[in-house]
Image 1 (tube, rainbow, N blue to C red):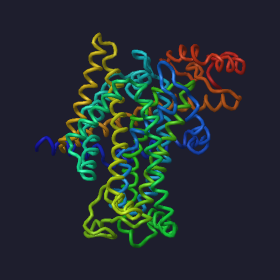
Image 2 (image 1 turned 180 degrees about the vertical axis):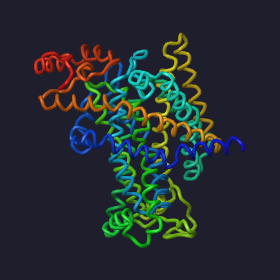
Image 3 (image 1 turned 45 degrees about the vertical axis):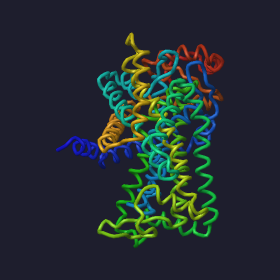
Image 4 (image 1 turned 180 degrees about the horizontal axis):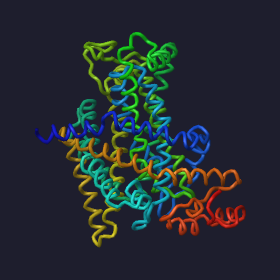
Length: 502
């Protein structure tokens, strides 16, 4: 067995149905135990998005949200949705919505934990699963393992794969040589990441809303043009999702499985990636950023993925494969699964626009994912080496390797690289979901404390002892320096702020 086959088998095992059930179970568990904050606190989710401000050590809530969303919104929002429809039919879209709704609970959990146990490293907030696994679970080998697999999945292989998608789409749409694309992307990537967390946050805050908004706007225009098809399209989604449509009855199981699988792969809820961006935010309470990042799952799947699905289904530009052979639906003879469905749907509005528009969308989607990967890699390198005397040199070399990997990916890719990326991300998901379930007690405590303070009419401020949380001493300094007014208000209401909640 060669290395490519071996890594492919390992990736297949990690991304088996076991991971799907684990992610789904985690989402259900946190949603039920927290009484569905993704519904109850939707106003807070949106309100906290614009509530925080950046500081010398952290970015604003919105910039952190944009960084995480940049990592979530990627090529999967176009090709992944088409793949779900191809193998699972229109009903798969409903199950993507369900996993996004439930996944918001897991997203809150990991993001709140990242805030609780973040660290100040060289003047920047850093955090994520490796940090809260060590401090919360007190299991350093477990934490080191997570850091290593993140570097493999997001650092050594991830950038090249994202760059390959950019180069391939640019070549197909505009005839641009991959070498030219590689130089441009690598230089731009280097410029942003060498500017540090602030530049990454500023770039993401400016680009992510624009790219997502423009994409959704195009989808809405197409939807308006094909408005007469909307009732039938929605009927098709729901009937297929519940095995009420005879035509798609043979693939009902696939509708559930592919909808959940592609939804998870797209929104990454519970996989630990968004948590690392969350730790960079300057907020007065971990629950605030937990709610913000829960909302980013909604934006990824309920807005961007849905935009792709509605474009494809309302125009009828899709195929659905029959597991027994042939097709259940073949509206595009000879067209394979991938970005072609979205391209053809846009072509119905303006012929010839589909390919260049999707190429531009892929550039923005993949590049912001590339930036997120760069930041996540740096955070885990910082976890492993921040006490090393040569830490600054190691960080510098890490950025150089990321840039080289980005350029190399535009001119050459391999199945091994894709497999290693899948292995890294798959292991991240397994390790992180197990960790956040084991750390569910502090997750629930942060939300309870936040809601209690809101009921008192306060702007919530985090006092670890009040939540029964240890190892989060950094918050004593953060609150004293930045949130003294909120702390005084809490003292007036409860007296002893270090007394555990009732």
